[in-house]
Image 1 (tube, rainbow, N blue to C red):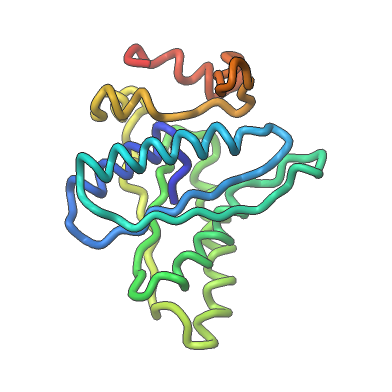
Image 2 (cartoon, one colour):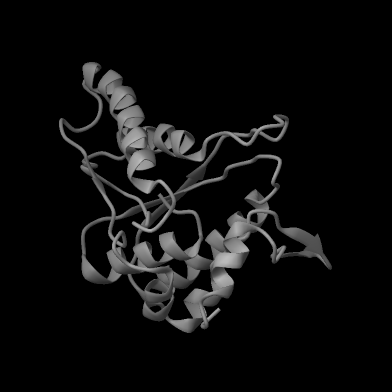
Length: 193
């Protein structure tokens, strides 16, 4: 699952360089009142093009729910579990789902466990219909690394293409980071950014 942020980009680079296994990269366009889907989509497209040109071929797809008319921002990890389930059954021979989660993220242990439980329940329904593989493993390729370590491991050109802002500002025909959200503040702690 690929968001276009630092964590998922580092995960993608790692999977592309440390394995030659077939890879399907899926971006979830999460439309909500933060209005960041356009900025993320632009980053994802640039990142996918960069990685395809410099690493190796892979399959790319995108989909997503639209919550723009809701006042609340839906719980993202549940939406990710739902879409990951659909992608897994849509990918013949899929036995692994990789997520760019970091150990130091707030409440990641509980959130990841809840995400996997939601996924497992949905996937069991498909397995009952004989769709999907009998076993599917969740991978966390960059889990034990810090954001600074992830940034240092990426080529500077690739790092510059990543997007993290949760509340982008659209000015002069392009998206600009707000500079004030939690994701923007986290990026300021990394010197390379």
